[in-house]
Length: 383
Image 1 (spheres, rainbow, N blue to C red):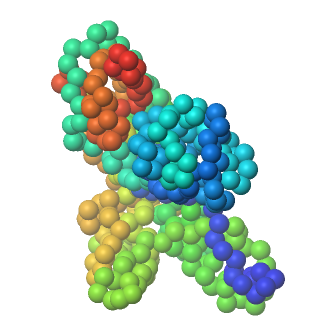
Image 2 (image 1 turned 180 degrees about the vertical axis):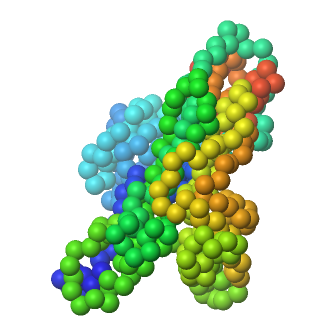
Image 3 (image 1 turned 30 degrees about the vertical axis):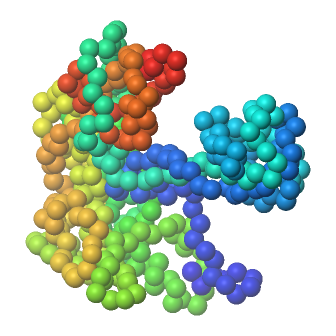
């Protein structure tokens, strides 16, 4: 705000992946996972092979420790040997983890292709990682062990935003982008799921800060070190694509001061709570609702997101009317809070399918399951 770097440029936004993910999952209930794919790490002409060291006839530029030799030119495909780079010896020499000098078909001036496994992080809505397509069916495994995972059973939810305008600011009593406490009234356990976003979604805090940019001074302001989040719409009929802040609420029954200028309707704490309902109702209970037990700010706020052209962020309330103090109805969970462990013989083809679709459904004795961990012996197939 009114601050430039010494070279006159505007400072960039910076945040860590951890803060970004945690602040967004508090709103949208996200999940994440590592995914792997192969990419070409370069082709180089072979000069010599001595024991476990390969020297090239040119200077390499793109080889890393961990890269794998996919093939050696016209002499033959040796990808099954998993010859892996373990050390960069010099600008034209690498040491590998297999002694390739014993392969007579490897000839000088052959082309060696290196492959690198690229690691990516996939972030998606929580449901994405529990898909319904069955990838493997297992019947009657020996010594099946079941254990309850109580850490996945929640009786309470604390959700909303860490910062918002307080009662010392104009009209701030009207704000509802604050914090909520909910309870399922489950008595067996007392675990709280805490999903508090560090981003500021409060319309009043955002507007007060916006007005600060027109003041001539640069005095410190309470939100100077915070990030703000906006619900936007995308105009799909204009090229290049334009994004605008989504504005407006209807059907408020006079519970908020200015519904036509309200922003972030679909990011309200009660809507965020709807995104988390699948985590809060264990399948083996009769708990039927999530009750609001503690609120800050405008507890009676009632909103329906105003219609507007363009592509919009999904509204957890499905475009309907929602009160911030509403009791939320049960949503059936994806999984039961239970871990099943066993050993079972799996073919190489089934193992390949399992690794190719790590989020798919695994049916065990007719029960739907999802993969947590797996390891396989290539000699016996026992997994």
